[in-house]
Image (cartoon, rainbow, N blue to C red; front, side):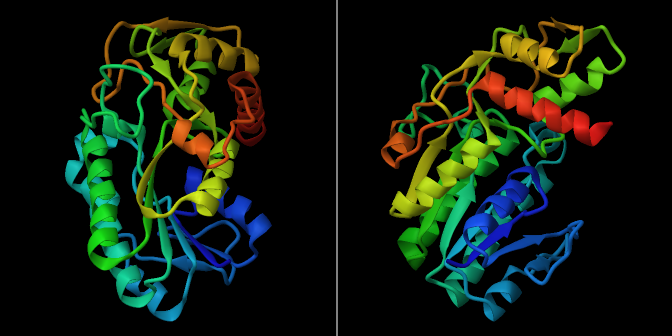
Length: 300
C-alpha cells in the first residue's frame, strides 16, 4: 500500500507518518515546512500556493491522509478567512487533484468534534445535530460536505474523521501544554471555564489504531466517523492527573470565564468506530503519563 500523509510535520500528521511507515514502507510525507530529517519520500509545498496537483500528476497513491490545515479555534476567530483556506478550500483543491489525476486514491480527511458545537445531549453520534460555534467548526463541517460532494459527483472515495480531544507526544498547544507552560513559574495555574466541562480525551496512539481500522473497514462512501474513547472526564480532573504526571505541586484555578468557541460537555458515541474493530487501549492516566514524559524530555 502506498500512502501520502499531508501535514506530516504536525501533531497528528507526524504520528501518522511514523505509524504507517512502520507498516507500509511506501508512506510519503508532505508539508509546507521542511522536516528535520528530509528524505526522498517527502514533498515540500509552497505555504501560500500549495500545488497539490503536482504531487498527483507525478505519483499514484492508494491512500491520502489529510492531516493538514489549522487546528486552532482561537486562530479561526482571529483569522476566519485563513482558517477557511486551510481547512476547507485546500480540501477542495486536494480532492480536485485526486479526481483528475489519481481517482482511485481514497481520501481520509481529518474533521473535528467541533462540528457538533455545544451538544444538547451526550454522547453525540454521527447522526446528532451539527451546530458549530466557531469558524473552525464551520469550516470543518464544510470540509465534510466537500468530501461528500466529490464522492457523489466525482466518485472519489472519501471519509471524514470527527476527532475529539486528541493529545499526546508531539502536541505543543491546547489544554495540557498550556498547563505545563503556566506551571513552570506559578504555584497556581489559571484556566478558562469552571473545570466541570467534560472532554472525551483520546491518546494519539489510539487515534493511529483507529485510522488503521477505518482504512480496513470503511466503505469510503463519504463516511463520517467519531474518533474518541466513548468516555468523558472533567477538565479539572484531567488537569489534576497531568500536574501530578509532570511532578508539579501546583493547583489549578478556574476563572469561570468561558472561552469563545469552546463547548461545555463533550462525549462521543463510538459504536460506529467499535463496529470497525476499534477499542481504545490507553486510559487517560496512562496517556498523560507518557505525554508528560515526552514533554519533560523534549523541553528540558
